[in-house]
Image 1 (cartoon, rainbow, N blue to C red):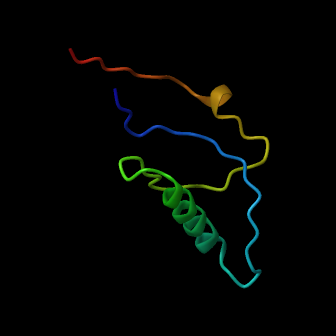
Image 2 (tube, rainbow, N blue to C red; image 1 turned 90 degrees about the vertical axis):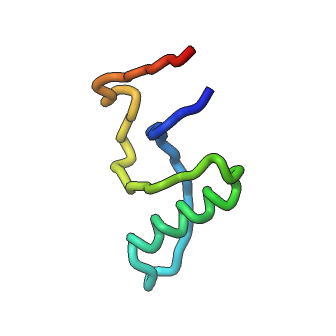
Length: 68
C-alpha cells in the first residue's frame, strides 16, 4: 500500500530568529521533518495556515484507487 499527495496538518511550535524570512522558516521546518523521515517518505512543501484551520472539516472529497 502507498499514498501519493497526502495532505496533513501539523501544529508545531518552532522558534527562529526574527531576521529569518517567513519563507525560510517554512523551508527549514520541511527540512527538519524530512530529516526525521525514512527516505521513501518526503514532505514536499508546507504552508503556514490560520490557527483555526481544520483540514477534515474543509475537505471537499477523497479519491481512492485500488489496483489488484
